[in-house]
Image (cartoon, rainbow, N blue to C red; front, side):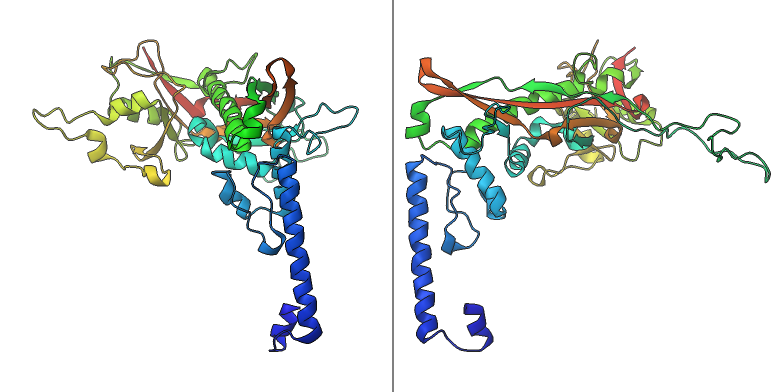
Length: 395
């Protein structure tokens, strides 16, 4: 009605104005009813959308989720509201209440993505690796084509191998790869007293769910770093190549030697990875001139921008903090440890079953007058090319 009036360059008047005023009054009444229903249902999510207020959500307690919800679709907002109601005690909100269901559901994508950004510091491996999302968790083969195979020159009448049986002088390179599973990781349950849900201003979604997701992200990064690949996900340090250094203490020259141990094919996309302790040690290395306090790293190499999330660079390559790696001692020595790695992490694949969505389950704890919430997620990881990543060891 308003758009039509504007197109005709006139104001609403008469019957149209009365109809418009009546509709606005009805919408405001609906808003009031929705707010009342939210309060009666104990919905503390703060995501109710006023009908007369467009798509901007009402001020709530979502913290980092608030900005994301401003641009959410109605379906996404409905999922978040249902999740908050579910965690608050209303299992009818979003649970799978079928004979085969167990009363839980997958975390809405908009919630998980926003929270994973908040905990990105816990997942340095995921930030640089190759992600592979699958709908199911059945064992699956990740297709890999050899990138070390070379071409061949043929005579004009030679057998090319491009016949019906795919034969030729030598067998063709096959498109195959490692089988990735879907190991289940549990956040372990957290107890929520009934009083917390009913009396507190705590944001159940951001606080409780965020804490559970952070637990899983931290554990996954540990597995992606050092996992044995047999009973758990394979860490990149398990089967990667290694460079043995004869020196007793880490220095910038050893770091450069490590980078050049990786074949040229994988070096352009290479990154360094080390713990906070190791990186701090390298940053504190001085020129060695008496009284000279200038840092070798700062003077010689590019700095990152922490405020923009840009990693620092060492020898021109980004260096990422991974505190699940070994650290050097205070004097820079690293006996029986691997404190630094370099390589192309696009050759390290992380499989996320169910497209990486966490599955949340809530159950009553009558003996303590409250509820417990637990989160699960399934994944696996494999290093496709061992020479693509190299770790530092001691000879």
